[in-house]
Length: 186
Image (cartoon, rainbow, N blue to C red; front, side, top):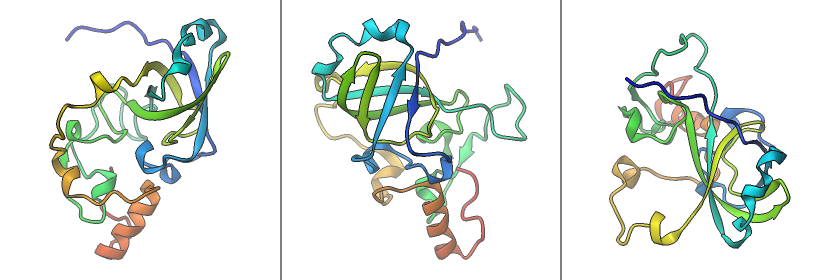
C-alpha cells in the first residue's frame, strides 16, 4: 500500500469533556453543548468566510491505538458499536462511526456559533478536550445532504438517545444483559 505524508494538526478542540466514556457519541445527540476550536494562529487567515456558514465538519484525530494494541496493528474489524451495547450485535468497523478504527479519524458535524480571529465557537460537542483538529470543512447542504432520505443500515433500527455516552450505553447494556461490562468494546 502507498504511504502518506504526516498529517498537520491545525488546532485543538476545547470542551468540558475529559473522558471518552463520558463524552456524547455523536454531535447530533448533544446539539446544545458548546465547545471551541483553538486554531494555530498561522492558519487563522484560512477562516475568512467561514462565519457565513451555519455548520462545519470537524475532522479530528481521535487518538493513539488502545492500550495493548501494537502500533500499526488494526483494531478488531468486527465490533459492537456503542449504540448497540444494549442489544449487542457486531458489525464491520467500516459500518460504524466509533473511534476504534484503522486510522482514528473523527468526523463531527457541528453548528458554528461564532468565528473570532483563530477561534471557532461551536455547538454539538462529541469530542474530548484536547482532541487534535486535522481539518475543517464547511457543511454545504447541496453537497452534503442527499436529495432523498437514504438507508442508514443498523442505525435505522437502533435507538439514538439524546446525550448518549459510552458510559451511559454500557450501563443500559448492564441493565439489559446483566453483564458487568455490557457488550464489550465499541
